Image 1 (tube, rainbow, N blue to C red):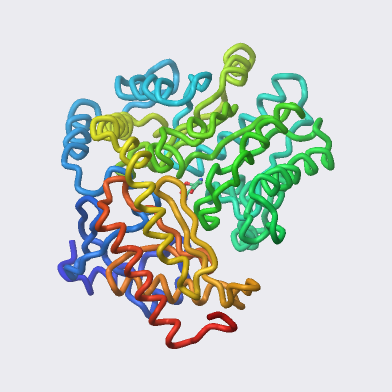
Image 2: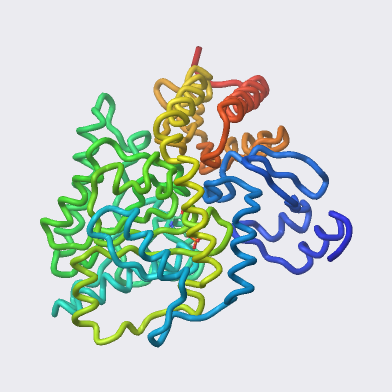
Length: 458
Ligand code: PMP
């Protein structure tokens, strides 16, 4: 291994193209070389400490530095480092994890297909929605409906399902067979004075309109993130998700939840389906499933679809070499045990969520802040050029990026989505750390405000 951080940065610059990064920028700016972590704290190769207010990429739910998970991985590697789950074989951790997920997730979601990433899980859902209707003798039901700003992954199908236009612009996407509707983003789409409940009804109606426009006999499924993460922590107004589920049922369209971010405690429940009392046909799980200690994902399949696949498929022509990988499954199981043993979900539900909401609310009077919102332990602070009437920054995203970078200089990692700062710390974060996130954001915003000023606000 090269010795110094600058050697590493040079090798990285010369040979590594990074995800969601302008390669040209990295020719000039050396990347931070992360070296280690404990709980919610990271340190880089130069020894600088960071409070990771994004839990990696919203995945390190149990926090960094869990020796126990390293030991489980090592023990499983010694016992059986790899075997596949094709052709009538399985491994002990894989079978145990499948059963555990069936136990933890809401009733009726009792079957699991494993994969290695969120993208693969969502890609599998797209394929199985279409397969389900083929097996039902309705092969014309093919179209998948996604939403504006939805993020479901980086494969061709998941970019097509998602609503990130910058992604679709690269590579000539979306593919055929995907349709999109506006999302339940009240900060942007709400009418003045409209109640959250009325907006929920109106936004769910966009999905019904799209189904009717396309013809329900051509629509296979609707996929939603319960809380849109990468899209900017867009939290659904009360009743929206239940209404979307009801619309799907009524039009005989499959209903899938992308719970890659929302499951495993982030919302103070094992899943958003549990929290909102939903019964989806599919649920995608990843990230918090192993807290990022191993790449692993899973698709939970509802009974109606599972029965059809079991009875009629004649064999699933589908599968990844590493699906249900024994080391990843063993680590995921141990991770779920930590979440249970340390009552991390109860901690988010009964303690952290209120403290987090209160800390973010203290920012609401800062003149650059147009809205703060949170649910469980995920939240966003929307920046605006002017609050009343609301004027967004133009061009979008510049101020958000400056704030993110200044937060990072002060040792707090958050992410900027357009001009929203999004925050989702590990579930082991302390009250003091939550306060530090909010206090640092306040300092940075006050500094910037002094430099750029704000239009027409007190
Ligand atoms: N769905 C959601 C909601 C996500 O946030 C992500 C990743 N950020 C994905 C799917 C894709 O997961 P992966 O990057 O593991 O492919």
